[in-house]
Length: 441
Image (cartoon, rainbow, N blue to C red; front, side, top):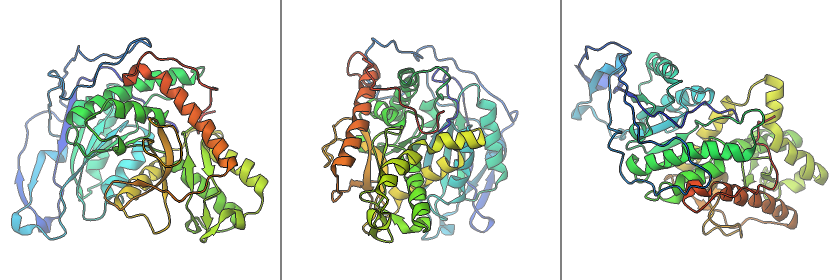
């Protein structure tokens, strides 16, 4: 996936946009006008934030409180300078408390699709008000203002608050969901080890910020690549947040697998279920056709072409993103945002009976014999409370296990490569091969 640009350095300024956009029938309006220029910015330098970590250094333990020089500073913006107060007698039984959602890389293409889905009620429901906290970089700050303007002009009644800034300690404060999209894309000639180190520093810093200021029950979905190991770095730097609350996005890979199975079987997508993506979000990922079903029937009984399943199907899913780039000249953004929505809804909506979904989660205590202390995509079920459990009744044959072991080895090697960012010692990179991320050429 192509990812929005994000700088790990210079967290220095923040602007907050606040509102309660309720319908005219249910609000009493108390207007406060702030006599400041519309785009007034205040610069704060933070000399104590480190922007690079030498490979031989061990990362210090994450802070449990925000740094003293990361004080919160907010200013109103446009329509959000108007405060709407909901009278107690106007509240209804369906009224819900505000959900605070932080999004990094908020000025990028993926977020450009995602934010409007969140604000529309498509994700959390038509009666769920939300707060959006948008994190970008110094370079993308004007673009963040443009995003805020579009959200402002869209008149979403559920969108009550919008904040923009470049300091994660501001943006992540009290966040209940953190969607970490922002990361640097892999440039020409850059090896996977280099990408791990550069983006790992970003996610180490964001993990510390989440640990310091986010809700203790925050759910974190890491999209920025390499997302599995970035999620591991993030959770290691946030020891006060349960490791189970961190996810690496592999839902797009699952959606692509369902598409290919539906095309081959001549059915629509909704007939395909129980599809799992095992392992890493890379070309070692394992689309599982052994446990998948079409119309409730095992895929291998519907699609009897074993060679296609073992070779062409697997490669099509692994390389789908790269083919899309060749066709369109850019990587997937809309479908990635859809998969983020799917991933969230799978956690806040009860999983249909007998089905499951894929997510990259912490492996400690898994029933599959997969190495512990890594983030690995596995089959999950949810009761709709934001939590999940791993599915136990899955079949793993020799073919599937061999593929799982290969992607497991890659993730273990990536873990050794970022030991300096997880506080586990000196980094040592011995990646089995320089595998590509789905979507890379």
